Image: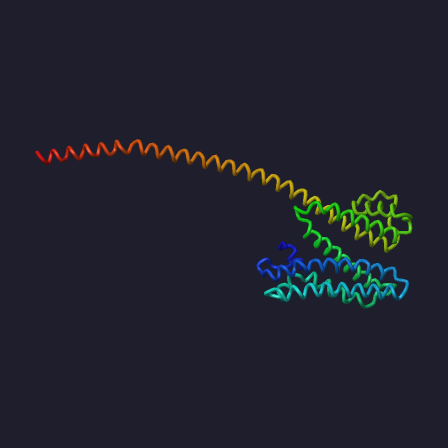
Length: 281
């Protein structure tokens, strides 16, 4: 990853670390993404819990997130040459694993103001980690996957709004609200009214921003790459033309040298004969 992500605690594995560490990290990223996705239903089960089994299920999901994140980090750290440096480069993921462990305690409604702030901050970190994790898989050659990912976000968003927002009376209305939120249009015909649906709207907006940013970045990279390929072809053509001109000049010089060589040899021979005659006299 770039230096900016390294400074943010999302540096991944150093490219000079070794093949084993790079292979372990390529698998660990999937577990980190899965752990972050698990936290979303856990948060809403806590927020909407009306029974003890919902709260226990949420804590179990947080436990699964903690195991997935901590296991991925530990497995990669053991494969690196410098585990301490790896943990420092990925302090953000370490904080997520610790946050999942802490979230297994408490969670019963009503939440205090401090617990609201901490849980919302934790979910914001998870949303950021999901966007960063997805950006690693949406490279230029995988740009076609972006519409599919956007469709999945839209379908899940519609289901979420249909379940959480009382003013949404059908799945189609949920899809429309999810589109308005992800595209940040905000027509105002339907708006989230409950705390649960408003928090869910925040996640949909953040994911929408991420998807649009990745799409526009991919299109820009494709256009820049296309221009670079055109310039590379023109440069290659100019180099070939220059090489042909240099070859022609070299042949002309060879011809001139061959043309002047006999004359130079003849004059040298005549000069030697004249010198010999003078010595004889």
